[in-house]
Length: 331
Image (cartoon, rainbow, N blue to C red; front, side):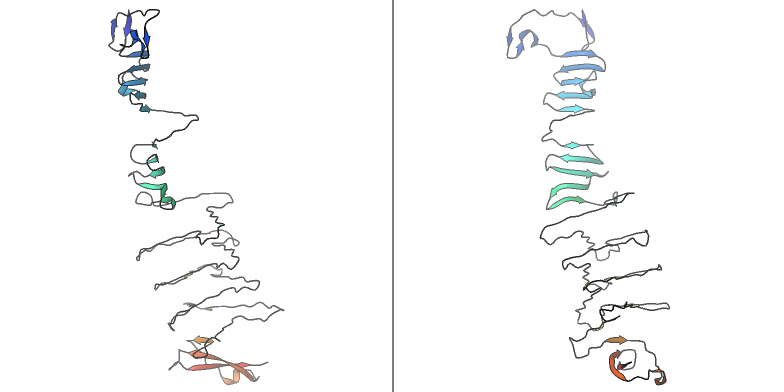
């Protein structure tokens, strides 16, 4: 007598003959076996009409099982080598998870609500997309304590390409497209642009009422410092607006001090020029400078040399906005 673990009863066993009739279905004397078992308890392998399973007395409780359709369920699986084809692999069935989907060949990282946070390979010309929501508000965090590059984009093709494009399209958006914070030493930079072959450093196109460029400087350093060498211009501003009330540059200072300072270092091979104003393209209503404020200087304080020229100035601060002339005295 042997113990039958299927019915937990002692039953007589049948001794198999040494030889028997066989067919393509196996030995005829085994075709009527309804279940088999090796081991007992939780260290058991069993098989019946449900399938094959290991590690439990019942199929439904087994940590590893294969049903009659070939579906495999395993609580832990280690695969060394080989290929998995045509299957969806995911770390969980619901909620926050990572999914490699067989249906569309995508890799998706989902949040706790099951929505895509990162999707790779979704098509439409987009290699990967990041969707921010109430549960995920930061797209990328790159942390480093060593010298290196946080983000690098290389494109050596003869194409018009954007290295970085940020679009805040809502009309009432109060956000910042790019926020750069650098708490380093005096040799550190917020933006370092090395341009060559006619490329422009910054192009700002503005159609609204806001400022194209606004700089708030509360430190002791310069808000803008331009170091120019070679034959290129240090700063070029083109204003094609027909509105005569709009300026290419507006500098406003509410406290004491200078609105602007232009220093020209002496160069023995050229002229020393702090500011150059070119208005040769329009002979009518062309002014070198426009001053709103003014100061009257007594004639006795003027240099004794002769006048060799004048600077025509539009004085909008005076009644009727008259044209003034600044005499230029020769040495």
